Amino acid sequence: QKEVEQNSGPLSVPEGAIASLNCTYSDRVSQSFFWYRQYSGKSPELIMSIYSNGDKEDGRFTAQLNKASQYVSLLIRDSQPSDSATYLCAVNEGTDKLIFGTGTRLQVFP
Amino acid sequence: DTAVSQTPKYLVTQMGNDKSIKCEQNLGHDTMYWYKQDSKKFLKIMFSYNNKELIINETVPNRFSPKSPDKAHLNLHINSLELGDSAVYFCASSRPGLAGVQEFFGPGTRLTVL
Image (tube, rainbow over all chains, first blue to last red):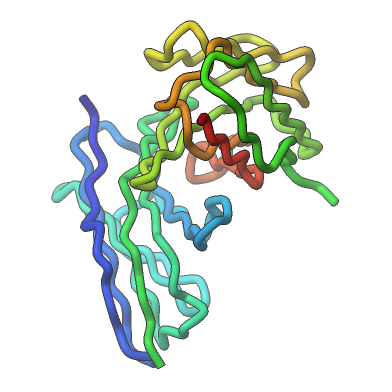
């Protein structure tokens, strides 16, 4: 069974701090990786995608991928209370299917 | 607005009933999905259609029957509803992107079976 694992949290960080969200995956052939944000009662929203080893930055978000360690992370700089949500990691191994982790709940307190 | 839309947003029904959820996307995507998200927030794929053809069927009870009349629509019919079917059901569509398949989700249908 291919798995994507995340710590369920909650991860609590103060406003202005860096939030670090981590994800590990079991299938070595995984090719592309996604971070979705889901506010309570809303649908998942794609915020970052990454497919090469290294870092990819988009505004306050940085995705980091290490395929050798089967590890992908999301850093949120200058965290805001509006970033409080559940962050879902998803992995695609080259098919039309994404495998989702169970999500990490992030709480940013003022 | 370009989007993935679902109806109804809320569905409350009795055990044993049959119900349908409709999904439409106007993004021009070829692939559409149904996901189930349970109370623990685990998002699990149920079905996927590519251009009206079923391509993924993930060990879902055959009480669940998807139908795709065209590539912009994917409906989900559920027979003989059970308590365990209570969840949020999300429709999604996807396009191939530089970083693989990128999926866009509808607003969800919260199904409550009493």
